[in-house]
Image (cartoon, rainbow, N blue to C red; front, side):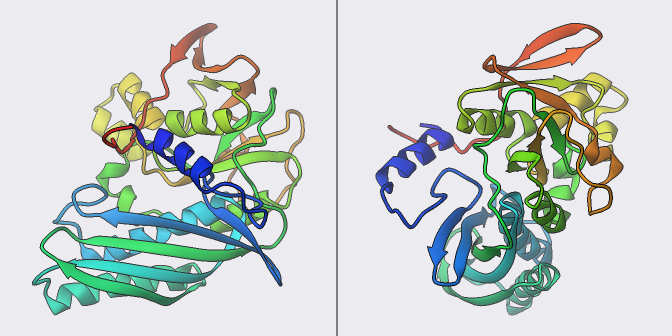
Length: 305
């Protein structure tokens, strides 16, 4: 069983609560409370999966927070509170614990939120840091389910080559997400964490089984991906399409409706990298040719069904 199949099953298993405007299956949940809508998400980072044993622990702490804040950003939410669960390797030195905590605190401060609780345990295994982020909506919630045929596709930053260091040092696009949520021309959005193709396929499935065409000459490629490709543009492009851990925002925008001037978006982010089509599937378009793509990216492999 793959990760997405498992999550779809969880959405059915826990379905039925009328207090959930947005439940399992999006970048974060939205719940109703007496003062409005809260937005909640939870993501772990695991040694050997999301970082190596050699990674500086202050960067591991930052990543643990920022992965969750990137999910809040994809919903257009403003972060408020964090819960942190630490499962520490037995014998982890106090100085290294302090480095981890420094990274957690620094990322929380940059995100203008606060760690308010959590838990800690020790075991004979790898380091695991799980963060629960709680935020609020200043307006509407962006979800994956709103894309429409004809929408243009956009990303807030370059893609590919994240393993060269970006996967530990990225900053969540909180300003961009909150700004996009204020504009009705934006129909759907999500955090790109598992690779552009796989996450785009997830968004299109949530929007009713649509398809998309990507413009090969418009996909922004991170410098690290170009460097690792050693001048091979095709290899660099494939990295941008499928490497993952980019943590930029992907959104769809009504065709012909420009977003207002100003705001946090770069000029590059305002230019489309593709468009949504009614025909299911993914295609790469270049020089008048249309190449079928498979939605490849990173998925956790789960045993059984």
